[in-house]
Length: 345
Ligand code: SF4
Image (cartoon, rainbow, N blue to C red):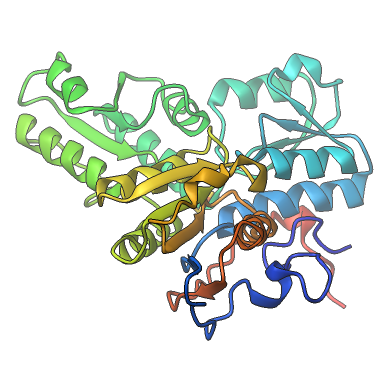
């Protein structure tokens, strides 16, 4: 069965609708007197999100509904609603899952205590943790196993950070700001290692890593950071777009870290930037006469169909053309867990 949330699927509107005919056309020319929309490339779904969504869909195909999912599979309400409609049940506490039921862990990863709780309930776990998050977990475990104090650079309360901190038994500290680094009560010669959340701002993280390296002379880490290819590519695309637009819209959920970072990156370039969950979040007054070019991008957990709906709404509000900018074509694909891979034909 095909994906209910295909990131490549165009808008479902009829031929002649603005989104279907114009959105993403690399040759689209500006219409005099009307705002132009420029689409960032790349944008939207990353390989880790694509894999996580596909895992839930295949689990439903294979085992039937309900399939339980621990936390939002990815941070996007539309994705969650589409999977819920197919029979996924989202829970924040494994005690709400019947013993022995099929249960998917989200792309953000989980703490060891969650794995243990799942074992105690005899759950049939399918792990949709993104392989790049799993790599950070392995680094954290290795460092602590070698006797180092762990510093996690990230945002307090984010599912990924909760999971990473919960992978290690030894001392671990979370820092999210330069003040947090300054407040670390550790000696300058402490044996310290750092890892980072995968979806942070490149600039903010660089500053925090430099501050840690300045304070702790023996600190070790992953080179510069663990920020994933998708986060980096989307932030670079926003930077490339920033000089050309008067307004930038980021399509994404408020609890999506990488979508929020895209908005911040644009704002840091002096661009008026807004986060919208879908087309209903657009305030028509944003397209005032001073706005000639609107940039449009999406966080890594946002399906393309929402971008197309936002583009269609901008056209309905007066935009004259939607042009897809040239940019990096990503080809990263993560394999499904063996139990869910299709059988060879
Ligand atoms: S944003 Fe990066 S780390 Fe997160 S799911 Fe996507 S590829 Fe994986």
